Image (cartoon, rainbow, N blue to C red):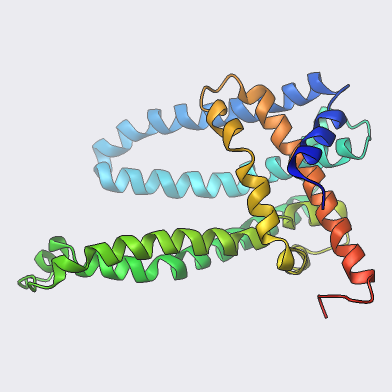
Length: 267
């Protein structure tokens, strides 16, 4: 596998003559993100007056999650498709980012992968954070107030264990979620692959590459902090998308070479 710097250099080379289109695509994604923020702020006030702050917040979160799954993720997959073919030196129109809305079959493929990743990720997060949630509940006075029971003297002393388990949960969930990193590209690269097969193949490909993927993601921390200023996202978002496509290409090629090797580690 090449270094992160080589991957980023290849990504920049792939965008060399396509920056206007890449910036335009970035502007579309950022505009939709900003629209979400505005709609949330506008909807929260009337909802909170009818439902209360907590119920309004819960309803908005549920609505956002659903709308992201139904519209945002298929658009994201279409965007990744544009950068995937651009990384292969193909001349692809900007309208390609809407390709998963072009037919019911393609839309359902994107939707299926989106919901599968969401459900699996939710399961991973629940399992990884369940021990810390239990300890936090045990050490919280609110828990005992709800059940109208005096708080045991020892309960307040276990909060440190809850913090340690939370940190462990973050680490474990991040490692486990890395297994699905290549799934969108695998589905995009081969239309004959089902979303379920894309997820399973992503897990197999990532078997010996989670550390490499973690290093790749961490190499973008500077870009992420720069993106907090919003305007640089017009440049950092296309660079990240292109780098992701290039990285997945090297990851797939690396897996294919290992499978073809007489010392196949996947057997």
